[in-house]
Length: 366
Image (cartoon, rainbow, N blue to C red; front, side, top):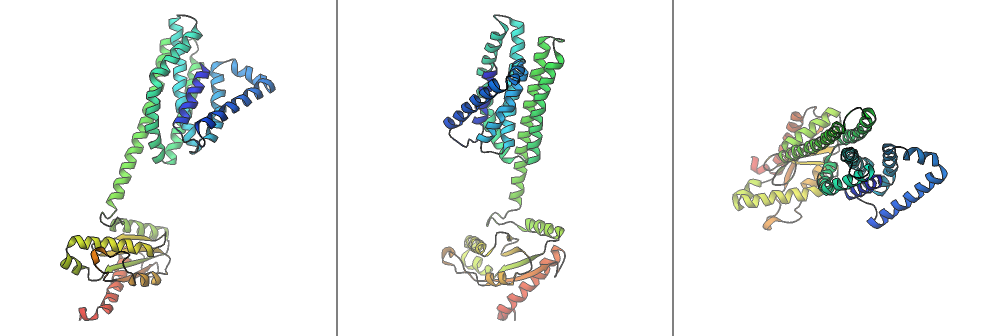
């Protein structure tokens, strides 16, 4: 029974994990590890082998702890992921083991050991593939999107359930009926399954909220962050006292694009500008479209005149439908030298941008 449990758990853990080597090499390593382990304990430390073999649950504990080591080394995901996967299937197997042994005590068809093995095997045949399919689908998604705190909680829960199963076994002894023990183990397994499903649902809901937040803070046309995101990011920099420069960008003569060529061409013009402008930015710079033809860059430090000059000299990487880039005007404000709140920074940068635009197009303003 224990050998069957071991094979089921190792197979399930490897099936739900990313393996570093091929299946053949992975299982070969496990066989070699088992041979070395049996040789070491059986011949060099026989007392440990006798102590473990004296009690089935003790042997289960020993097997579970020891085989976690090669499984962690043979899988390429974080070790906590492997531990949660292994513990989850170990809880499943412990409950099947405990329930099978107690059902065999009630039926007494042949010997209790043989009856237990037959019942356990039947239980695996009925439930294992369903559980494996569920775990592959749910666990992969959950781990990919789970925060570290949630992962630690799930890991602690799986270990706690295993300890509770052992505690129930030794605490109850022969003081209650087999039916009561079976009910307790099944209830415990159901509680663990429900908890994992709740964790999955929580992660799924959190991811949906996160994606919704991303959508509400993203400009649908250019795929840049929008005004709300800019204010949020700038406010966070101000809160931490991190010096930065806010560059205000306004496209020159954009209205003539819409008037002469239509709004569809105007949209292409905005997309071409945002794609071309990205190449001027560093990895830490943040780029936003805050309204129709107005954009903002948040840049670390106070040295942004060079970036403003580079934007002033910008040309399209690819002209949309033959429309040449008509230029832009920039203005900037430094935090904390020029202002200490986002409204004043925007106002100063906007004013400087307007002055630059006025100088460039003096005849238009006169």
